[in-house]
Length: 200
Ligand SMILES: [Zn+2]
Image 1 (cartoon, rainbow, N blue to C red):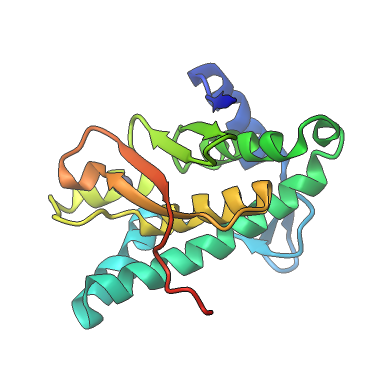
Image 2: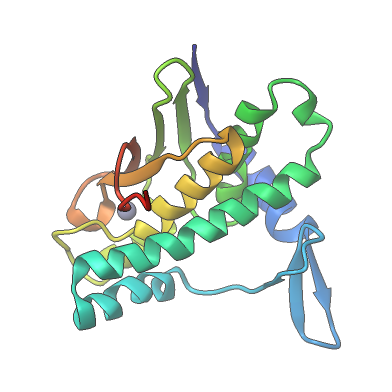
């Protein structure tokens, strides 16, 4: 069966109020924010600075190591995000919890300002596809700095991998097959067999 999860523009507005306002609390003593009751400090950061973690490291060690570093950090972010969301949404998880947790990723990303996306999941083949029709926030930021040959959003590729695997209990890796920064009209992430070398 194929599942398709989307976020309309109206839902994106509602998710913004929920994710970026209602779920954030401020600790005035620390001057630090917390999200969704999690113990992790949360802060606003320009999307272009996330891009810089790739761009600067690319200049030092080359694209592939830089991509992997960005991907792995994004992976932890996606995994932890799904983990916190799983605790927030215990009622919704009663029925078809895996796909529901996966689907909640689109609303969280949109509400957090990372970009509005559509997720497709084929539970027979296991293929998962995340498409951002207007690009990710990082792709939009990268495009501001000029056209690239290689995708700019490995952080998001890692994020969707972490979110997908935490939701479905899979070991998917993701590759960005279209990116705004390359001149494509959108950013697209597809599940792939291998990206990281397997430990065994
Ligand atoms: Zn991109």
